[in-house]
Image 1 (tube, one colour):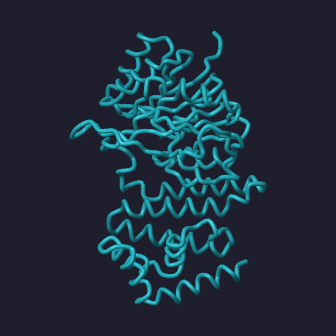
Image 2 (cartoon, one colour; image 1 turned 135 degrees about the vertical axis):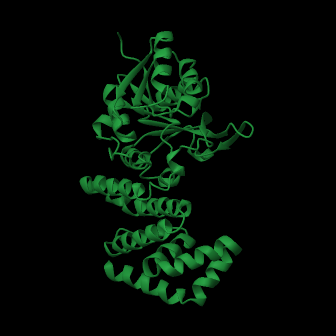
Image 3 (cartoon, helix red, strand yellow; image 1 turned 90 degrees about the vertical axis):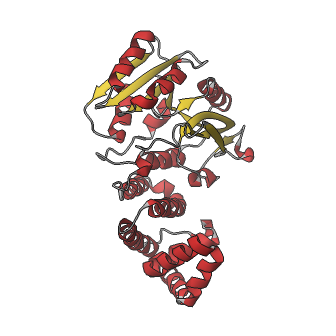
Length: 356
């Protein structure tokens, strides 16, 4: 058999409720020259039976059946098995627009791109069906090749590895794989960072090509048990940068990404987990600042303020955050000033200057 143009990876774990809609959207793509690799991560529901049903129906569908070892291990097995020129990823509770792969391949070929990234829809099926456009691609990024190191805006966008295509030889050349931490989540974060850090030609597409489900109650983003998984992902980003000294210019970019990721994680946690994670933020940010890994020129002023307050006084940050959530950003600023925040900011900046 000749190699397919696209290898579509579908990681699957106990998703029988949504799997048929997902696989229907894969099999009905207007681009026919694809293989659909379903990686079953030890599902205990009817997901394996549904995959076999589609295998009988469409010879392009095949299954990797493995014991449960987590998302990262599943994705790496899929990458190792893929034969296509391009790699696509479709989460098993999401579904494609009918021409998604055709649109992405056309952009990749037009710009000789290592990566293509498109917009997507936020999708709810209950209480009634709803799609909301999520524009990860700005108009000025579209229809031209972009080097993310020179134009780093995409680093700060929502991590989303699925409304995209990746040249398989590009991933292999740069050793880009997923972190295989058993039971972990958010393993798209480090993969996403390594892709943007390594790519020199990215094509961005304004079309929305995928429906990203928001109402899957079993999604890892809803799990408080995954408190420190995002820390593992950032440790992997640090390892990657340590191994590539030519990419040290991205240290400051990575630190801003870290602040955004950690604040998102902090906001989703309930007490006492939020306090525990805030202390972890304090320790890591303080160490990063002292190591000279922070570039405040890429920070918005309010993010710079939050970063420094976390470094100097987690308690003050928590009070300011609570005040902001209740009364707005002005109230947070007033809280910082009243509780001695100005002196803390000056102290933090002095440490930053001294560390350099």
